[in-house]
Image (cartoon, rainbow, N blue to C red; front, top):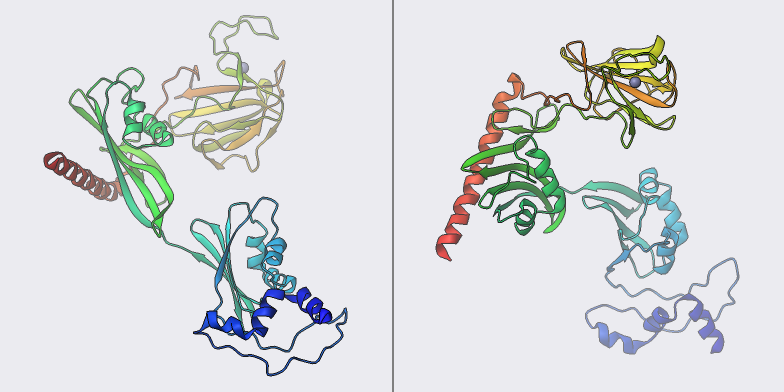
Length: 429
Ligand SMILES: [Zn+2]
């Protein structure tokens, strides 16, 4: 008897008990149960073949089990914990699509497992992110993997408020998060100085996007449109994505509200020498104007394009050393000098985006230390890069005007709907 107990206990004492005990049937009345007529003859277990009692499993409907991945968990751990075989795991990992997704499991992600009573995996769902699920299914020919993209329901959110003293506080009270508030401040940057020009009684209305899957918010928060009213004057700004996929914020008449340039080609760099028309040259020791701004930074620090454009020159040019010139449009070009090397694929004719790495800080040419010499030219004339008024990005081109107007009208209608439902609430309360 002890021998039997030990044998079963190494397998699965609870299930074996269930299978062998008629009394158990009373708790599962609805389910058919197959009981052995007689106990199998004792056999001597061998190390090479796992012991299999000759008992038919109870035909129980498999249930999904949910595992939340803990820090340090491996898939093997999760399989072992659920008494699933390592062999099945290996079969799944032999599918390239599954191996790629499952090699990147992270804590707090969810895996659902469906196993039959023999601890054979029937299906596995791995939630890669809020909208993507890897589905593994057991078939007659082994496991198959499918990656499913869920389509979220889009719901436009609305917030409005009246300012008492601070725009930030009023926006928070209206339910906007700090990212959205910063976005609004940026959007209205050229119209309203929120730190100084905002007065009690000024008001705002905001439409923002939200995406839900089964009632759970999975994404969203981007401002779609916003209106700011001060002294009886309203400014409206909306987000517009053109048919080519370029997104920007625009005024109602189609002008971009974002700047086409950033001030500095190197983030977090110290200005070592400002633009000056009367500077004493540090190496030549003669009065010589300095037509750019110098940013000191360690050799190898990435230098980024300050605006979208096309590379007009990338090469060596006497005092400038390794230098890149970007032509932004007919009016504007910028120059970046003394580079140690150029960015990947940076050569004349290459299109570059604002923020793209075009080279690395060095001290080639006439330089007494590692820095980037940066020039901002308008119609060929050099201006102080730190003070020159920066132009806005391009307005909506003629070809997209119709599309832009259609979307603008839709947003205006949404604003009206929210306004009238807000008025209804005020009247009824
Ligand atoms: Zn310089």
